[in-house]
Image (cartoon, rainbow, N blue to C red; front, top):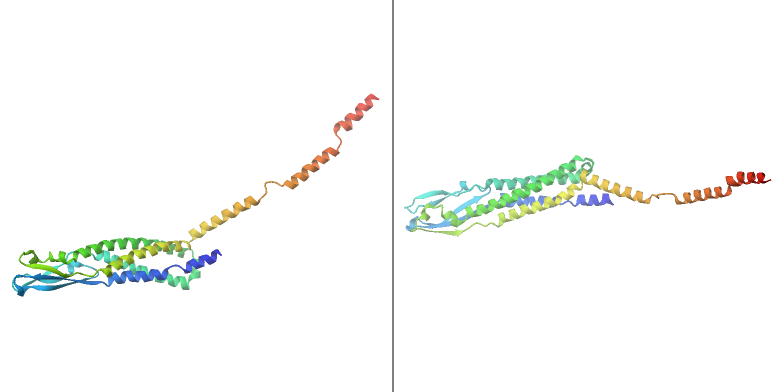
Length: 274
């Protein structure tokens, strides 16, 4: 029964879910591209540009993103760059997602085609357990870092903040405004999938631990201790029947034998009387 339960728990490990949510995590983050638009309305209407498009994408090296804005002095335009570099957090998050997908895919192949060797080799479950713990921790760290970086990206690409980077907008005679901002649903989803992957990998630690020698050894020790305790209670402290028979036999034997007084003392005293 225990072997059947172990086999069922081994087969029910959520490897397919790990792969699926890892794909969602790095796809929603690594494949993102956004755009915002601002307007610059100069006193000289011919110099105005009411729809300045600013495109940015993964890995969010915003300091490399530039756009041309009017200087409101004739037809002169100048190149303006955004501020910030959030590539480290984004690339770290995507890297963890890709490696987690590859490892879960490899583990699924091992579970399906090399399950017997997996159980026979004690090192394989231990390695699997350690890697699962590491990925759980890395998912938590990378998701937290990416969530913080995403909030900074949103602030750096806010149209109201971008207007402050345009020199013409600092002149009160010119009017600047935002046409529309970026859509963040994809990146918000990537953060959600990141923390969901952490929950899945952390929950998978128990399934992996059950395959290690640590869990099996503790189970054998617990089973052996219970059997020994049960055997100890089943033993009788003494043999009641043997004691009774022996005791009664000895008592009867002592009663049937004449005492030293009746054999020796009796005749001796009788002959003396004679």
